[in-house]
Image (cartoon, rainbow over the protein chains, first blue to last red):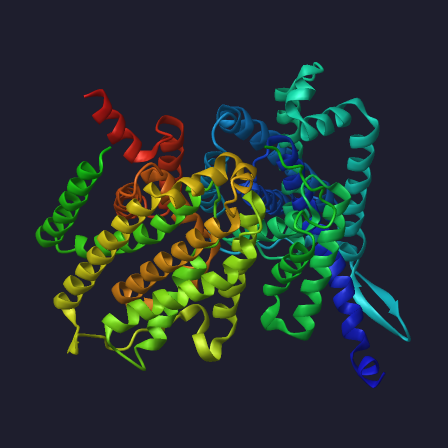
Length: 310
Length: 310
């Protein structure tokens, strides 16, 4: 018990940190998962969309602030940047590139997204420079909250406490409702489960794919935009994000929305505890969790094992 | 293409490498790196035959490179260091392979990715041993007891690379034509059928995996001897992506493909970096896209098609 008395605050801080971190990771991973479900391609460039969303939000935010906009304007700017990136790049990539490749071998499709990642990575450096970009106006505007934890209180930024997890939860709820109860959502599920059968039922699979990819791109960009006030953006942020969301997706099982939330939470909390307990292993923990899960459940936590065909 | 034609082409290629390295001294470094990477890609090619993509073979490359770097302090003999590093990579590959060959497609790719990222962070975080992102310099190296330095060193490593490449190339060529090679391709077509014939797909894939680890290890050892400085970047997932990139660029149809691809890749990189210093990665991405769209069989596919037409 004495350990807890001494380190209780750290545990609380790690919990809060992990929660806000998991929220950002979830936004990226759930988009990746949706896109994989419909296209059967693991989009390596998904991390670049996260980075571009972050950069676009920060640049737009700094620009709006320089015009003398009030500090609350930062939040809608973050959203607007994400929608902009998703709506512009999503259809562009899907239409011009991925659609042409859909009859190719899976390896080649994967490599197409890798090529795209390489191109976007450099374009992002050319467009936004290599200096770290910091835009923390929304973070400062919302201030900090004292979170009661046992007898103590932990000061934590309201942005990370309410906005990040709030948006993630809202995204989860909206996705769950849309996928289950609306016609568009059920069409997405149908294409995910069996593209051929869905097309035979008269579903326009190409349209569904375009829609899903755009939504996934917007979610990645939103994840980047939301995380932008809490981190300083540097080149390479896309590369490290994508491997983390791969880990989340593989842990969750493919095509699982709620599973992605659970896996993001597991990995987010695991990582933030590692930061406080053993910082050397911070980067290792997500993969350790993933390997452990796959050891016991090869199809991921919530994945469904595929039947073997002869 | 007949075995004899391929042998002749391989020998002609080796002669061309020696000729170029003699005529254009700065190409010696580039060509040695290309041969070393090509060796690692040859292993990727084996896995591609089985329809599996590893996004983590940089692990074996970096493992062997660091083994050589640390090894120079104990035994400076290149003829001992390279086989030892390859053997070490093979042993680690066997342990990891026993686990990962139970998985297919994206789970296979992701597990490899995860393990290589774990190794990457170990290299980066344990500063006391690995000097983190600074990397470590190799000590003096000898060849048959004679100290290696300057031009002699360059020629010796190039020669060593050529011997290894020709040896492994011939071995893989023979192995792919054997029943084992046919079974390997069977994993891609329909694995269950192999089971029905009493062939264990896991064992077939495990052999390919260990062989690929050994080849990646030898490649990594050669890279360490050429650059004389090793950094954790060798283990980052983008290095693994690069290996898969080269495999597709060269074409998976022949054992000559990886080396053709590696030479093209390194030369493109050198020239792109000289011409557009900030966008060489984007240039490579565009090259990769063009290859996938216009020549899905890779550079080797182009040559083979021309020969068939003639």
